[in-house]
Length: 251
View 1 (cartoon, one colour):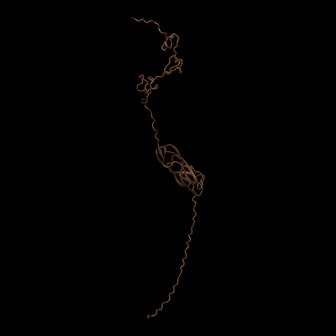
View 2 (cartoon, one colour):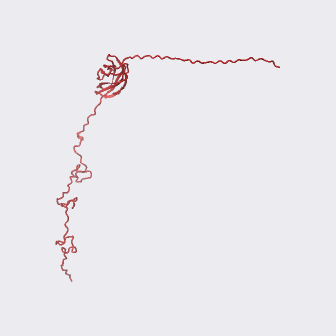
View 3 (tube, helix red, strand yellow):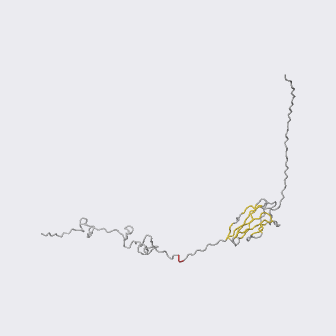
């Protein structure tokens, strides 16, 4: 018989763990923008694209579109001032219209293409009334070209015919199919049209178109004492009588 073993009691304890979420609070600090005064941004070339070829000595107008993006409007007295490069006959300063922030202004400068062929660039910048430069460098870039006119064409008088050449065979007395009254009057002279009333019934005249020349033919009249060729003894015995001359028969 086996001995009896005592089993100790085991107590199980359940421990519940609670996770507490961590909340992170981020603080946003807004730093105020400090206004720097006047401002300008290039928008577009309204005229004269970069590298455009223009004939030497020609006047042209360059127009830039610029946006006022500063804190204050461009006041009266603001100019577009030449900075460096080729000025191309333009004034040193060009007035700029008063422009509020957020709006665009078209700035025009009149220039003249240099006489010498080549590439030219000029740079300009906005300037406030108190002489402060601001905004981007606006530039114009062109190619001056010389257009050579074509020489005038003159004809050699020796090569110019003084009269119309006569067709082959002109003067042989026959008006051929290639000849006309204009090209060969010697062979194809003026056609003399028949004149009605000249007493001649031509081939193009008829009794209907010209009865004066081609009148009604006079038919032979039986009994006029004339035996015409169209009359016989049978058709007209009065004009064509039978001769009663005796016939002598020789024995």
